[in-house]
Each structure stands twice: as C-alpha cells, then as structure tokens.
Length: 336
Image 1 (cartoon, rainbow, N blue to C red):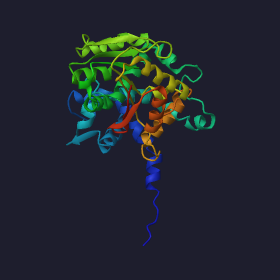
Image 2: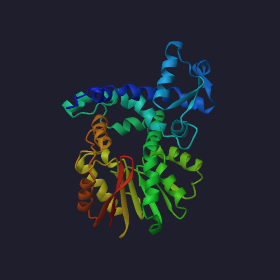
Image 3: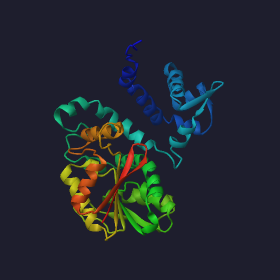
Image 4: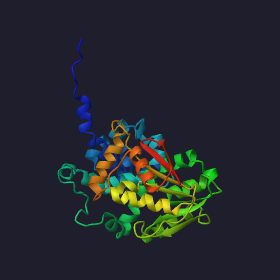
C-alpha cells in the first residue's frame, strides 16, 4: 500500500520556534542556575524564579518533556546536559550564545522575509553602518557578545586542540579572539604553546580577565588592533574562527592575504566555521548561519570548504585540507 503523506514533520518544523523560545526564556530566567543550587518542587522553584502560578507548571513540565529538566516525585532537577552546559557558574557554560540569541537574534529573525527580498540586514542596529562598532560601543552588549562567541567556539576549540599537530609549532595567534576561549583551550591542552589573541582595543580587559581567571596570563597576551587597518601579529599558526563569514568576498580575500603575509614559511592558517558541505545539501546549520549573516551583516555569508581552499590558494598558500571538527563545524588548514 502507498503510504499517505503526513504533515507532521512540516508542522513540527514550522512550530519549532516554540521549543527555541522556551529554552531561551529558561536560560534568561535562570532556571538551570536555580536548580544547580539543589532540586526543588513546583512551589519552591516558582518562588525562586518569580513565575506566575498560571504558567509555571506548564513551563517547567515542557522543559521536562524537552529533556532539559527531570522530575521525580514532583521534584525538579537539571538533566545531565543542562547541568553541564547551561549553569552560568560552570566553566563549561555555553549559554552565552543562547543569551545573545534571546536578546538579539530572535527578534531580528522575525524580519527574515524582508532580508530575503531586500538583501539588507535586519538586526536591531540596522540603521548604523557598522554592526560591530554598534556592539562594541556598549560595554554590557560587548561582554554579552564575547561570551556568546565563547559558547559557539568551545566545542571547535577542543577539537582543534586534539586534531591539529601542535607538536610541530610553538606560537599561535587567534584573530578575533573575543574572550579568549580558543587561546585558553589550546594553552591548557599543550603546555609548550605560547600565544595570544588579536582583537579591537575594547576587548582587552575582558580577554585579560578571562585568561587570568584560567591562570594563563604568563603564556597568553592580547594584541590590540583592527585586522583591516593593521598587520596581523606574526606567529607559527594563525587562527580565524567565525571571522571570515562576517565579511564580503573582497574582505575575506584581504584577511586571508594578511594571514599569509604574517606567517613564516611552513606556518599554518586555521579557518574554522560551520562550513557548508560542498554539495550544499547536508549542513543545514551552515546554510542557516549564512542566512544569519544576511540578518546581521552588510555583506557576510558562509561558504564551503572548497570555496575557502580556492581563496587560500589565491592568497599564495600551496597546501590546503578540510577536516571535520565537531557537530556542524569543520576547519580548513592552509600551509605557507
């Protein structure tokens, strides 16, 4: 018998924003932080979070159904994943990205149709010419953005620490380092490495605070500069993570050429992103990230590994390879 088509998958996909906003509000309200203090019943947790009695039970039980909380005999506690990744006080916290999604991206994505029709970004500061200038001029928003970048980079940083042959190199610089998640992860994993992060001047105190809290101030330093206006610091390895996709093609090519110029012979460039698969059929996250660049930036877009290898060879690199890291993320490695 021929199976009748079902609309369930389409309806579930179309209504998936319900799940997303429930999680984002849980992070915003501090649900997982509250339960990290200890399990709690409905009344206790409702009081801790300041929830109205009409919605509290449905909200918390929805989180149970989503496998973010567990409930035993009426007492709620965090699931293993939520306890590890969504408690702010833990170094494994990745919720910074979700905080930014809740505060900025969720509303902006409501204007995706307009972006698709006009090609113009739709973020909350869309009238300002420079997205990053607007972010960096507000200390609170800057700190939130940098924390989000740590969240999005944490898994890839650990994979790069494991998969790249660091024993062959001594120094590295992470370009667009944000808080310093990648430098800290590499320095922890490989005690022989000395390196640092390159970013705009406003980032320096946040980077140094994060590095200091991890006890690595003696091996990691901050390099202040604008990567379009200034030369990149020299090192054996230069890293660009979630950087190239912010910019148009001419700017991408310029940054790759600047990396080439800063490296010694035999030096390596690592570019990592949620690379779109070469056939553009499988990595939905990478394709959606490219739409996010439409929402957020004037000319940014994501790209395939083959695209990036081609641009690297144009910049002068002789050897390139693509290697999967974790989840939707892969790295393109180029050797000078």
